[in-house]
Length: 163
Image (cartoon, rainbow, N blue to C red; front, side, top):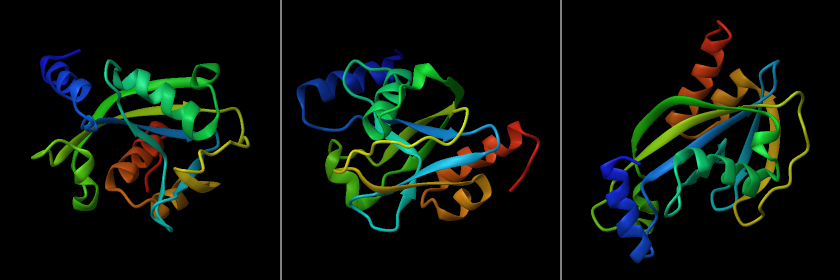
């Protein structure tokens, strides 16, 4: 764990704030069908599996946990990959109350999870209301965050495709 993450982790262990480090997990099939989840708190907001790290976790640990919590899938039972990249983004103002005062940016680490085929998932109803499997290009049109679009572009590039 780097010094900045250790410092933030220490603060968040003693306060009820979210740590401004998260994971985005792009769940897909070999033919580039992508799992999208609709947020329970924002109708029409579609995204991949995401979530903040918890005290003592690494982004890798958080990614595995979030996949289990949000879909019921065991990431390690499939082709789970740390894409070794991250994006820094501004936290939407309406979600900043979750973070320590003055925190306005989040570092999101990207992961991929390739399943052999589309699978049914079990949603966490307090987080998501629906899910869809869609072509990766269609997913890029539906997701609300630029970091999710970036992850989809990276998936395409890995397969020598572009949006």
